[in-house]
Amino acid sequence: MLTLDNVGFALEEDEQKVHILKGVNLQLEAGKMYAITGPNGSGKSSVLKTIMGIFLPTEGKVEFQGQDITNLSVTERARMGIGYAFQQPARFKGLKVKDLLEVAMHDDDITDCKYLRNMGLCPDDYLERPLDSSLSGGEMKRIEIATLLAQDPTVRLFDEPEAGIDLWSFTQLINVVKESHYEDKITVIISHQEKILTMVDEIILVVDGHIEMKGSSESVWPQVRDYSGCACFNSCTKEGEIYADCPR
Ligand SMILES: Nc1ncnc2c1ncn2[C@@H]1O[C@H](COP(=O)(O)OP(=O)(O)O)[C@@H](O)[C@H]1O
Ligand SMILES: [Mg+2]
Image (cartoon, rainbow, N blue to C red; front, side, top):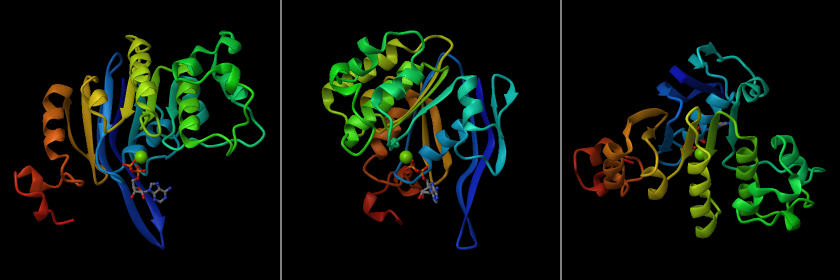
């Protein structure tokens, strides 16, 4: 179980406090798959960053397997089995694709890297490539996801894996994520894709830094789908009114 208990995250900007997350409560159970969805800038990535320890909450508590991890570093959390595939993966000057995968992979043979293959990248073409701007955004994204799959942590956090990925790789990605989701794992995927939102056990809708709705995919998906005409999921749409009346 991974728990976020009343988690808040605020940043100082121009001597003003900007509240990015407010009172986020989540209980993520082992064996379940979750999708986080919601408008751009609502705080989805920030939720995953507080789980990974990239953001340390300014309020509340994060617990994993009964242990308070609120103030643990990214490295400590990674050792405990939490892994995150960034929305915008970083490029590492001086490193090659194989260096990243070698760190992530346990005992597997790097030359037959099925993780790259599964993401539609031929290991022969990619293992020696430098992790620099010669790789496109989509290639970086697929390498990032392959690295998380190779690492195979207990908690797998995928931040918009669909971005920059072609349809074939996307279908393959869904299959691989599903197949590698064992009973002890917690998989969380930030996504706007119907295929993902209908595949998971639960959907978490994040709006304006808080959790607006959460529940089984069957119960939440129809509501999310119906509101998708409005980018902010604001109360005007909940009342069934017309999107043009949205205050934003
Ligand atoms: N490091 C940061 N500095 C300042 N503002 C940030 C930072 N990270 C996120 N934000 C702001 O927090 C809000 C939520 O961001 P994010 O979690 O990335 O949203 P989402 O993933 O839902 O698009 C946005 O308004 C974003 O601009
Ligand atoms: Mg994001």
